[in-house]
Image (cartoon, rainbow, N blue to C red; front, side, top):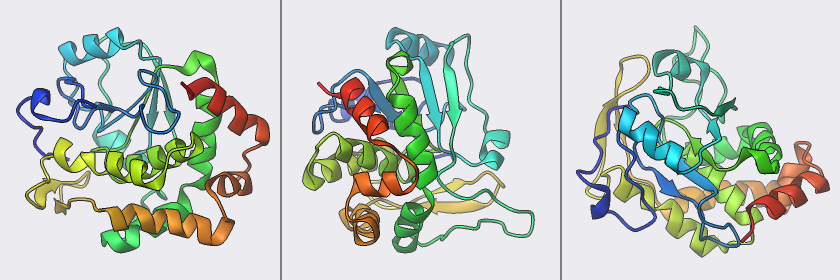
Length: 242
């Protein structure tokens, strides 16, 4: 995707960090009991610069959790520039098929509940990985870090005791990070098709969380339904809590 980065990270709220070549990079901590400096969120690393790689190294980056589809990985592989880390590929959405250009909804209002319905296995894999102390620090990213990453981080923050209000406030920072405060912007997707990147809103995230709670009762029960154990959830909380 080709959404323009803001000119300087200093023009953004303090959660943002200036990592050259990476969109929308910020600390996910400070929300609920999630401590700062251990879990970050961003867009992909496919335009990461050597300077950006050095700044990630200075953050102690050990793990990259990539939520993108196999097609996106082929077209926009993450760059490393000598940066050493483990990568966990866990697509939030079903993979494209040859006969279907994009098997998930284009409409944002449909996309968010749809993601909640497909993300369970990837979220459980992420919970298990983040429960390992050797994983930190880690970054979760998709293409630009607002939809798939937004839901993933919201679930993790919820597990760490954050209120919906605080989770939503953090979620909405992506509009500033991606230059969407003034409305939609065009971009080219992994197939070269021009699409429109739209701002996110509080009702979008609320629809994902409502889907989860309506069907499972709570975020922890949603994860349990997809195979998470009490030990998995306890390890995550112990590893990420302040």
